[in-house]
Length: 132
Image (cartoon, rainbow, N blue to C red; front, side):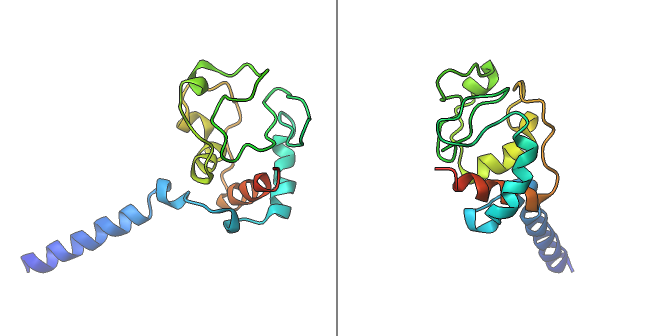
């Protein structure tokens, strides 16, 4: 009986770990649809551009953001929180950011609450991969 209870509890712990938001946000560029991401990005385009040579808006230009260090784009005034975060924009970090910027970097100036639909998150990241 004790052995079965321990086994059940162990399986429950593994299930909880696999369902955790951090793991659920693990993405690869193939996880999303870039064309759908372009449509979702229109929400982001209120504050960001993503075209080579385009200027910054309220937020920085996101062209070639995948793999870039956070707060590294010249001529943009980043928050102290983002400058000191040490983040590199991997797919996983972008997913966390797009889903909830304030949670990833408390004190960031980005006021957007985030995308709640995981498909939208994956699609936007797939789209950003096309902007190189």
